Image 1 (cartoon, rainbow, N blue to C red):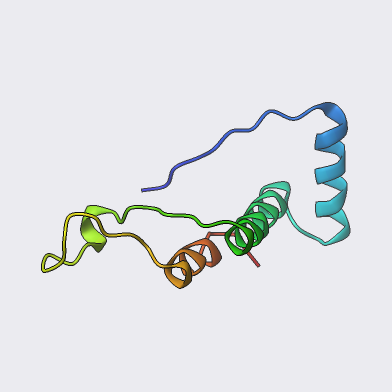
Image 2 (tube, one colour):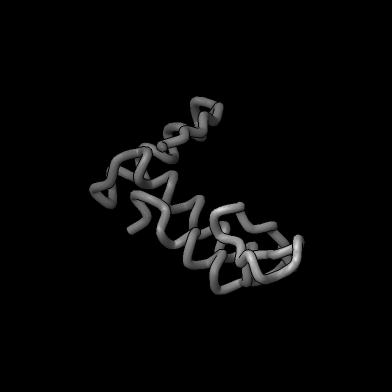
Length: 84
């Protein structure tokens, strides 16, 4: 299942993103996703983040409160589509 995120930009913000993409021979979506993923990686380095595991990722032999480890979250972020 693919889910989409819509963001509103000012004309100047859109221009900046569009020109960054053009200079690197990327699409605007590809550039936005790459910047989003990079921002997530930086955020994880500076903050303690606790995300409860999805039901399918839980170990049935462990307790009710299971969280993704930092390496697991980084792996998920780095596997985002269009992140190059």
